[in-house]
Length: 254
Image (cartoon, rainbow, N blue to C red; front, side):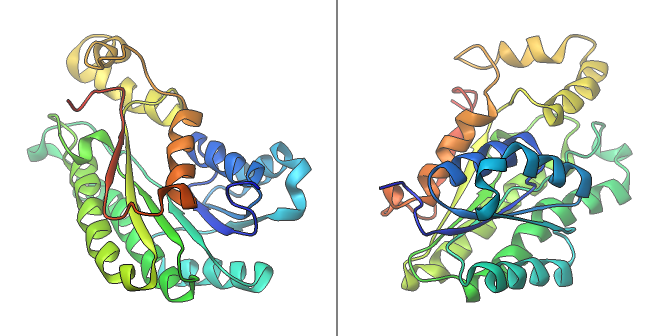
């Protein structure tokens, strides 16, 4: 039996590398999946990647920071599949890299809207519709447990979702719904490359090499490696795990 046979899942930030990798794992393990992202073209491209699973796939274009849009993709999932078992709140933005005294307030607000309000709304609207025994996974970051200069908005947002997760984990526990955070380190993807372009300018050296030097395993992670951890948390294999921060950072935080 596959790990997610008969399970119905929502993945936000589904057009990015981690969302795509995780959705692919969910589909291969028997799930029906709703892909959610702001980028409609990227969502359609994702559908072509998963052609063999097209009968278990639906896409929804939405801004996760919008309450109406969030309620709509939850309801669309229920209407299409008849239930909901797994919510993976993965949509995120990085913001700028600059000192807090120079940090643009509108950028700070947008980072908090996507990275914190998005998972809050996901939990608010999905939790009442989820079947007992389900799972919610929220993407934080290694900088949800540490931080560095210049990333005030991103670090604040990734710390915040850990507090959100711990609260929802206690509220959802009576229904057997588990709520956890996955905290990746640097991943080989476009999101990280954009972050590192700004970091390279800020520190005056190659940021990828700099970060690899801080990671005991000596390299960036792959989206599929993080996706495997999300799959574990989504499945019954993690049936006694809730309220946890699961690091996937190559040892960067130790």
